[in-house]
Image (spheres, rainbow, N blue to C red):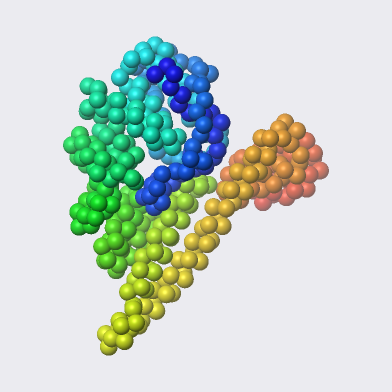
Length: 373
């Protein structure tokens, strides 16, 4: 274990700017280019004072956080924490049974599925691991794309240990769908939605996708719209965040796919039928155009975060002597995505260096901040 290299402290934003629905919608493993190259273990973070047990507890807390990390600094801080806690456990107790579990979680989060599977399999063979439902759930997640039968076995074990866990039920539904058991997949999808209580978009979105696969397009359309509403709610409750926008984008794509499937039901023979509902199909075309326009608008907003990433990289590369023009663009990009306080800091920094900077003055007025005298 002492030779295991876990995570790179230098990573791209893309690794952590992820959607909670990405695995469901894309349904394929991340490309190798998205995976960080391993480096030697970090020892830069000070160890928790209370020893190995505290390090295990704290590492679990950090690794169990599912919120996507929105910027490079967050990602680096997360990695620093994880590596620091793992170092503490490894140095003090290299044979600790929880180390493979923690390494497996960290490697999975970094996109290194094969190495994660090796560590998690080692863990579930221990006394501690046999009763840790999260380890079996994560193994299911790592297997579900290419090996649904293996994933199913792990999800079943996770469900034995924690029967009502929504993401485990969803995992079983995805396995059933991949294995061609559509009726079972649909039953499990409905069960997941009930367990979730319509609290999040993912179970409802999966139900819509499963209904569409079962040919029940009318209900699939209703559920896809409900999933979009749930995803939009997160934009309101998490302003200035990129991740909810990505979830909304996935829901628009699902809606578009479902409506196109409904339109596809109107074959030439069906259109010749005296019972052909031309008005319903006309509404589908109108809805399709509406959602395509809305998806494009949402994509434009997502693109603003890509602009911000480029400008932030430029600021970091030129610090501490970043030219004013780059800082002006960076400040406006921060404001464009709702990071008001960070934008104000940038423009005030510009004015402290050059009190005559008109761009900074104009932006501070827009942001309702009076420029300092």
